[in-house]
Structures are given as structure tokens and as C-alpha cells.
Image 1 (tube, rainbow, N blue to C red):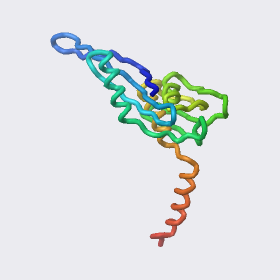
Image 2 (cartoon, rainbow, N blue to C red):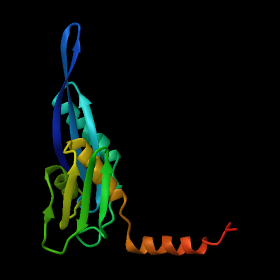
Image 3 (spheres, one colour):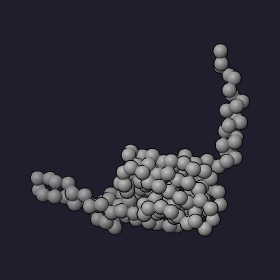
Image 4 (cartoon, helix red, strand yellow):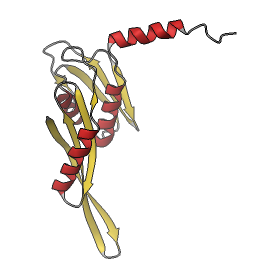
Length: 159
């Protein structure tokens, strides 16, 4: 299992007794073979926040469609004001990505990919946009099957 802590934020809540500090940890988990998950763990201590995040990320894992060591087709993932463009790359290219997107790709086991983050650089939103991009991917055989089934239902209910 690949476990990466992308960011740790210290959060202060102001109460009448003073400031109350807590921590949030953005964590990514993957098996290096196409499965990846992420979570935001929150707790009063850094270690507890990381532990909680790891547990939640393992529960939230999903399969990323891959073609060899890259993705099957180009896609754009969007979340809030962050966008991530994901493009397949030839063997030996490596992961061309910023730190946050790179962590997600490495955890998923993708070795060759071109990415470009557009808009906000908020780390949580970038992870979510990357995950949305991965969820928008599909294997070519699945796309062909879907298109065939769409063609079969085309004339039903038409006037």
C-alpha cells in the first residue's frame, strides 16, 4: 500500500476561553495497481488526524481504468474552481504533474501521464478534481459496449 500525506492544516477555532487548535490531514492511499482513495482526517492531534484519514481513505478506494502504465484517454476533472487536465503519455515519459496531482497518480500506480492544473491551487480541491477526472475515465471496450447499447435504444419512443 502506498500511503501519502499531502497536506496538514492547523485549524484554530476561537472560543470565549481562547483559541482551540485542531488539525486536518489530507491523505491519499493506493495499491499501485489502479486502486486509489483519499480522505481528510480531522483530530486534535496530528498523528490522530493522519490515522483517521488513512482509515477513511482505505474505505473510499476505487478502481482507476488504466491502459498499460497510463490512462486510456484524455479527460478533465473539475471540482469547485479547480480543473485538472489528464492526458495519456507514451512509455518513459514519467509523471508530469504538480505535487498534489502527482501524489494521486503515484498512489494509483500510473507511471506515464501529462497533467495541467488550471484555476485554484487549493490542495483539497485539486485532489478532488483529479479523482473526478479518474472517475470520468472508461476502458475502450466499455465505451464501445455503451455506444452499441445507445444505438439499439435510439428509435424507442420517438414520434
